[in-house]
Image (cartoon, rainbow, N blue to C red):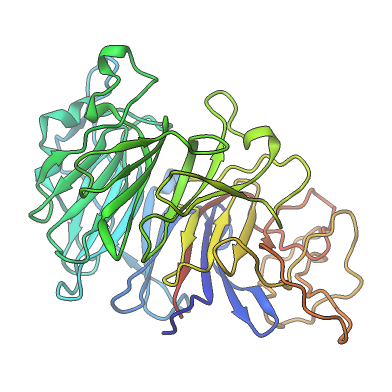
Length: 438
């Protein structure tokens, strides 16, 4: 394991893609579950094992495990709600039976807790496994809180746990964020003792605006080196905490807007965080059609927009909650969008390498990649896809290297009977990005 992450896992509705950085730059090196909806990928830092959560519609939610970096996969158990459990609707309608809709978050236990995993789900249950996901138990300490019946869906029909943060100093301290249900703290390995205060929900009547149980945190992240320092991208702005999620302060200077879904926090500097802002509510698009990564390096006092290397024409990419990730050095940042694009930067957004994958619309690649060459992904033989290959851009040897701010690995589905040269035409929608140390 090196201190710099040379691998990115990209979960999409068309499979789980692996992008590796080699001597020539970044390229897609493999795919698992081609054509299937992979909603989450997680790498266990204790042994390097990969977990992949899938949502197969009629066939339900599935969980897979790979001990060898995606070469082979085995089935694992999924969390199951006990018979008789119900979910409140928060709209006056009768409670509904609790059944698993989605695995929305995974977190490992400490090195001293082999086999322990935590899973956050829709409709709002926190589950614990002590045998590496071969079996699961519902954490009653949070589920049985009377406030849970007042949780509600935020963008989904049911509430969901999307963020689980284990305190690296004490494995019994967990911080959990619920959409819509606020941010909860446990100090004994699962029993919810406290809900954070200070966030506001402008979408509610004035008397409920500050209700901590009605808040819609879109994602919650902490600084691993200072876990009491946390950031939340909320439906109504950016919030930060300096006391382990007990109280939250609004960050009014977030620019170009305070709305978005994702946040990444520097691993050693709690004052540095990245966001991908957008507009709300009726139009989920970047502000003024300009895709931008917003960064603060002074705890939210000011923000700078990082746009160099991103699309210059009007862009309508949205970055979801788990589709923004930072590596352990705080230098390599990656994000994926709803249009199928993946962007990477080598130094926190200032500049990056001139990568091997480029998108050239409307022009067919002049040469084809030989069968079996690296980064060519095996796929079903379909007439309009046989001609679409991933090609490295040829450059004269004497051309000097010119750093660029962001490297773009484009994963896009072509129109029928149209080949997009130098584009990997596989993933129309990105759901989750994770940067892995290899």
